[in-house]
Length: 179
Image (tube, one colour):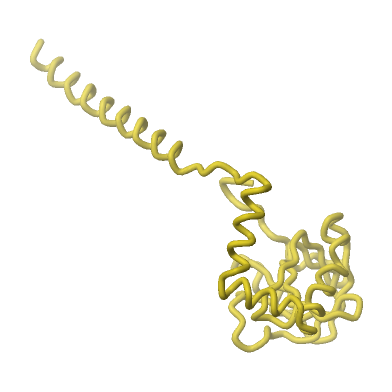
């Protein structure tokens, strides 16, 4: 009888020891991988260092060019709508993105006379509704984010919400496991 009890307890002790050891290892690696945020001075120094690289020089030239100024002005024009997450009326101008873009699914839209790339991260169930968009459709867009890059001649709006004729056709699903 004692041998049976020892035979049952021994694997339990071994497994619990392995689980505890694995937990300790995971905690140690997570503590090591968390970098400290940079101070304002360190951040500024890193930015100056990056601006001296070929990519930084190329970006600065694009930023000062007429095309770059146009893109930055377009991004600034909708910034208050983004920060307040308010409705922006848009007209779909194209159902395809510019050639060579790698933004996934999206459309071109005109908001307040400025053309934007509107890109989405749709789930399969939402694709059919987004594919029903047509050129000259009037839509309402809500977003939190606008970005830009020298590769694109238009500001990029990340669509969080799209409505057509009072019907929601896209709403970004919240991210799982985080903020």
